[in-house]
Image 1 (spheres, one colour):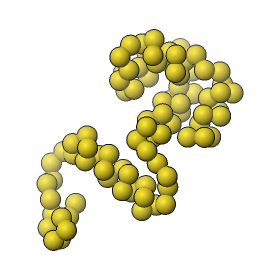
Image 2: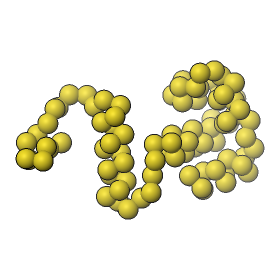
Image 3: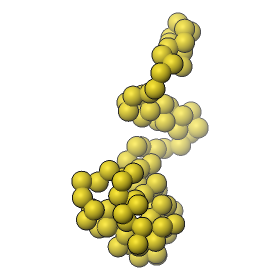
Image 4: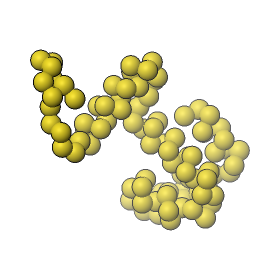
Amino acid sequence: MRSRSGHVVGGGPLSRGGVTHRVLLMAKKAGVKLSMHKLRKGFGCRVAKVLGKSGAPVLHEPMRHRSMQVTIDYYASASDVLQDVITRVV
């Protein structure tokens, strides 16, 4: 990444804020309306659809929910029809 003066900045791992900034900047440049919440929810819905209802333990870790119940409530218990609608909207 370059600073306003054109110099290369950093080179090490990006911080959480740095990743957020870059993703939102790329989305803006591409003309895509995106938020990190929508991106995260879309990821969760797509993975839940692939894994099926029994995949909640696998999805729980990358979603970083406080409890397994949250993951189950949001993703594992949704019907296939609901997941399809959520995937299209997000």
